[in-house]
Length: 339
Ligand code: 13P
Image (cartoon, rainbow, N blue to C red; front, side, top):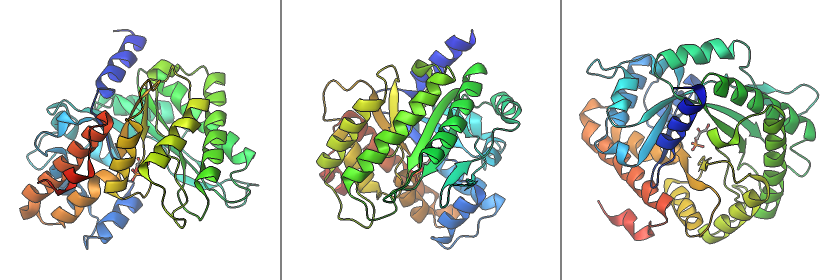
């Protein structure tokens, strides 16, 4: 297979009707925060136990086409000694890898951040590919205030996303490009739309400059919602604003938009995605690449006890199934009451 054929094959496997991606790539500090919320200490053994459990939920592959892993997990085996990428492949799930190395202050841009990890990226991606990773993820973060994000922060972060995406494609790895506009704040949905458009325009300008092939990448943006300290918008409003915004700035050549959940509750994230999939003639497949909104119920069901494995499987499979329905536009809130 040529590199181009390899990229196309991975896109075909990731972008399927009624399927989305599970983001299980929390860095050590982030997973420690999630575990703390359920009273569990984050040790390597506990992370292995938890992730082994969620990845082996029966039927997961019916609704999940890919899982994003943190580098530690890519090298781990499950509780029965099966390498994690093999465990996922057994469920028809494509393994992927988070390759950014977190974020920190952007010089001369007060209160803004830039993502790290370009140094040595090619070697890390090649090593991850050897271990089975076929796609990757890189996340940049933008804060909304009255005056932010600045052009400087948009430009600097877009440059990292574009260089990352180009390196991925040169190695036959599909890049998931994640410019996250944070939900924090009391801004309106209109302000969120304004910033969303500005950020995504900046990102695609830079992707084009770096000759990133749009047909073999996936965009992972935030939905357009009001800030979390503002009154919530209905799924219909979120869908309308999100689609209007991204129609203006996401080229139709991009095969799929897989949203992050960004602090929405599991039910909100599902209802919002479902409302988007009520629209006909969308230029892209619209699905999910959720972390918290997919995993929260499974984390609570597990609660650090192997004996709760069955309940955790059920919770994981259930959220995957509901989001799979939302990706087809066939979810209804009443389905939350079903077993
Ligand atoms: P959330 O869905 O919890 O926002 O996580 C998605 C993700 O991959 C963040 O980088």
